[in-house]
Length: 121
Image (tube, rainbow, N blue to C red; front, side, top):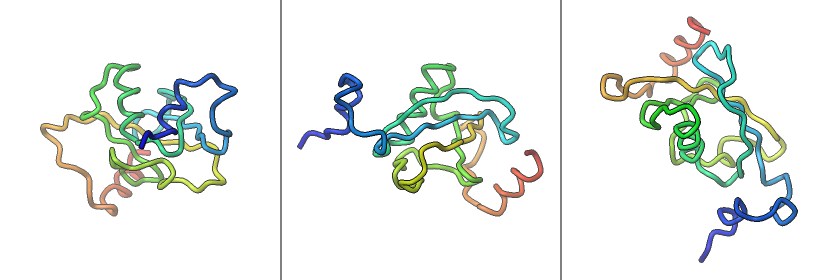
């Protein structure tokens, strides 16, 4: 079966699904989130990985060096925006951290991550 939502990216705007199927994502830089890196509209069923690839294209930072956080929690590349947000929300802010994946272990301890966010942001 063909994934119709993926094909919608290539359709003319008037043929795309209703705006309820779309989400405005604002990517902020670092834990302090002091500057906006990118603002993009995504399909709710798309993957976080697709945003990471777009960031790679726009700011030349490889997706493996990106950590995307939402409400202090790290997002997985395979997460879908529909799993992360409620359907009533039409926009979301995420933070992008630049890290060297070869020297940094994944942040999987929620308390440690929240302490880092409070300390630095």
